[in-house]
Length: 204
Image 1 (tube, rainbow, N blue to C red):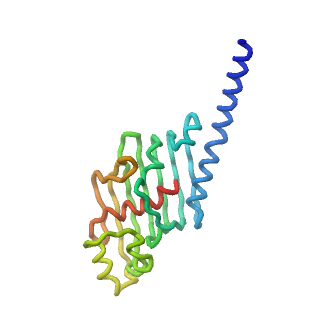
Image 2 (image 1 turned 90 degrees about the vertical axis):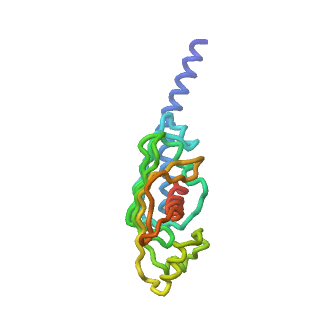
């Protein structure tokens, strides 16, 4: 009996060892594929013990770097669903496009499970690009921001800067702004921050 218990224990240990070697690279490759489907490069690193936690969207760390990506805008209400299961999150993307937005940098970090997310991003767009993509498709609400884009439509090639620097928390995956904010040519905006973040997070 003791012999069989020993054999079973050794088999379980072997399976656990194999899973630590196999599961992370497979999960990393899937995220890489989703991010680079339209072009660009990405480097994904996942850490979890046991590695089987990754099968349930959990782990100790998720780290992503990349550049030159071409991402179609995707809206999702539970933006942080795929990130909340990780103790630490580090996402750093540079020089890529998300729909009509040319993004110079996108940094999203959370140093600990109980800490808020910190988002810093710089990007640009033009009224012409937004009009071509469609305000309704982007989910832009009415109000000063949409009126600003409409008023600028005649100068459709004018570059509009978008600066984001805010602390965010997850409420069941939904984005809640704790502090900071964002501006589009000086106009405050929260929806665009959520839209850009969702476009990236949905692929992780």
